[in-house]
Length: 301
Image (cartoon, rainbow, N blue to C red):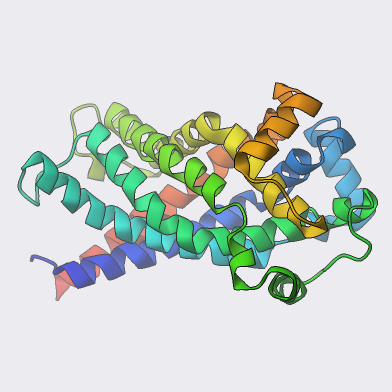
């Protein structure tokens, strides 16, 4: 049975939401450590020190600060990402002049994923700004950059609207785009290359959960290795803009390199890589299996 474009888009969107949920629930503590270490690298000696200090100062719930906006961000981003991924695959097929059912190469899938990420950025940027601010709120107060912090999603949202208006949610948009577009080329490229390796001539659709987990983890690792310095600058812009006017991408990048050195751009890389492998493995596993389940249900009618 041939599935029409609207139903296919709905399936991709729902499967992307399932993947986004799995991604957040698996990797949130490591994401919190990443944002804290990126924004305040001098406060923590490493990932263990960050975890210990966070637990002592804020408790276990400190690792899950920003979980609600993180869930909203990842569900929104991955829903849009995977829905647009399907559309962008069709666009790539038209560009290269092949039939709509033709399997794309790993490189062509990577290009489709890169195109799709530009659309996902528009829904990701506002929610990620709220998430990052909640995660680093304690450090902003400790450093004296703000007098009183916001401890809830609503208080952060209200603060952004009062201070900067609706456009304030798009602080760091250019750096988010700079991260997402090239990053997702490596993300989907790494995932598809890894699936091709495990398939060894068979259909990729026949792969079991372990190869999918490993392939998703490899794709996530490729993304973060490629774009980590850009993400570090993005986190600083989104968090430090709470304290007043913050320079744009190039201004923040130059300031960090001049005052703290190049290595400051890689602060928090270790928890990021741990999270990238675990969370993106869970993301693709949830996406592929929920998508297969829905496709089977549609085919049975």
